[in-house]
Amino acid sequence: MNPAIMENSLQGIMVVNKPEGITSHDVVAFVRRKFKMRRVGHAGTLDPMATGVLVLLLGKSTRLFDKFVAFDKTYRATLRLGVKTTTADIMGQVLLERPYTEVDEAKIKDVFVRFTGEIEQMPPMVSAVKHKGERLYKIARQGREVERQARRVRIDELRILRCRLPDVEFLMSCSKGTYVRQLAEDVGEVLGCGACISQIERTKVGPFEIKDAVILENLNESHILKWPL
Image 1: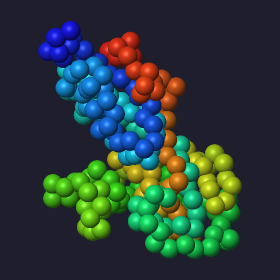
Image 2 (image 1 turned 90 degrees about the vertical axis):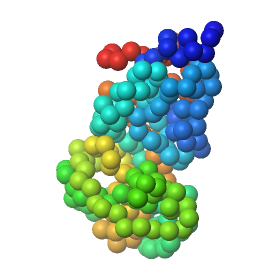
Image 3 (image 1 turned 45 degrees about the vertical axis):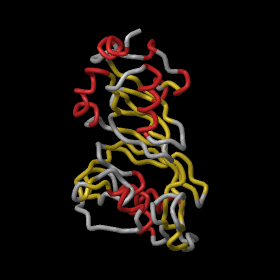
Image 4 (image 1 turned 135 degrees about the horizontal axis):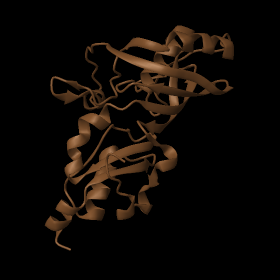
């Protein structure tokens, strides 16, 4: 089939279950090659460590980016107490380790309540937010840190799923622009022992849930959805 025809004929959205170890752009590049088309984008970055729901926009549907990126999101993640790193996750360099013997599940629940609702959150250095035209994560890779402005975000639900210290598995439903890593770091500061993230899975983006997401290797044209559904 002529690539130009394919470019015009394929449009819609795809809900992918992004695996660990690759970037969102890697997923976009995979789909571009598989379907021999150029106009493919994603609505909401997942970094290499994170897995789960990644919504792709194909063809003319890339115009829907602003609508899709504004959707609320839900994450299932694991917070590790007692460790603070350069990236707020276990992939980063350890900055300090503190005892967490004074922390229990009740204290964590109390702190979670403080972070529920509308809060001010500082974007982490390992994020796609831009500073003077450059992505923060690129600046962080250079070993630099720059001043950032706190942003108003909303956390609708924040609850413990399993507590086996030092690991705390939790669920967070939130507005766009809310960072799981920064939440973990902020919670760790309040608890006094530090914390980072050891696992992140995005389980929902707007109406799309993890059960709707397709494994990358299984993608085919039948998985292209029209919007609105």
